[in-house]
Length: 393
Ligand code: SDX
Image (cartoon, rainbow, N blue to C red; front, top):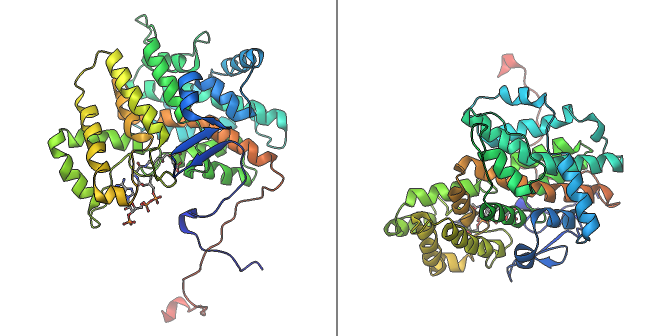
């Protein structure tokens, strides 16, 4: 019966697909990519190897890894004509705004990888997206600064290449710090996939109509931008800066608990985790490590973050609602220490999540059970009525 269905606002209890990619146990605070716990991958793997795992289901052997690396590297440049496209944006545009436009426009440049029914084209599109997202995000950043674009340098690893494209200038030598590259790589890996979150569901929904992969990933980027989702990493750091000193924390905790105040602790709470987000744990350790290695001691923002976490986790409101720091709580502190402005935080999330979006999109297309996504609604509008001509209204 087409008119029998369940009502589930926000899809809190609806599984929209079967998936073999990522597993989350929200009560235990566990996250696995293809069966491998995230803390093991964070300690032993790297973003590109993890990308291979997410895409193809198994860790690569040496030959497979070298081949994958080569394929991604081969596609890091963007079509030269796309430079003009960037120049059409205002310099003060948010880089996420530029990215939504530029990634969507990739389908206007790469016609040979838009046929979703052709497995070879799907594969090329996937690699292009993973390879070009760092280049596009770095170009958006450089454009906002009024600096020349920096071309990718293909003997560098994925994270180092991105850092160089953001921070190198033609008039000076630039050597990528291995400490920063490692930290960036870990951030990318921790964000790589997270089952059916809002942006991934958006990518799947867009893809379910047969839309081309570039359009689907642009839709994912648009969804990620919101402050309740990926935009929270920017919002969290701005909140920590606004709090400023530990003595002001109770004031903000009180605001977060106030039902009549829309303020929420950014970087706190999660739809699925009712325990520590395992990524936040790694990120917290990483923040300590990176700041230490960079010789940044007594970082006030990190101090505020840790104290805020401590106070919140002892507060009845947060205990009762099982609200813990999520992936976005500590990442901004690391990115800020690297020299990124807050506006680049969500673009970095988008770069990292691209492989997850692509893996989920491919899985959906290969799934014989998948069909166009089409939720129903409970209609609560007017009863049937007759049209009244304008002269009688
Ligand atoms: C990401 O889904 C994913 O997997 C996402 C993600 C990924 O990798 O893809 O993990 C990435 O998006 C992380 C989340 C980033 N967002 C934030 O940090 C923004 C702040 N957090 C929230 O707005 C909220 O916790 C959500 C959006 C993350 C989760 O929303 P839910 O599941 O709809 O839960 P809810 O808003 O209904 O909250 C339940 C209760 C509410 O109180 P009651 O109405 O029951 O009284 O908890 C309260 C909320 O008001 N609450 C908070 C809070 N988060 C929830 N109160 C204060 N501060 C908060 N941060």
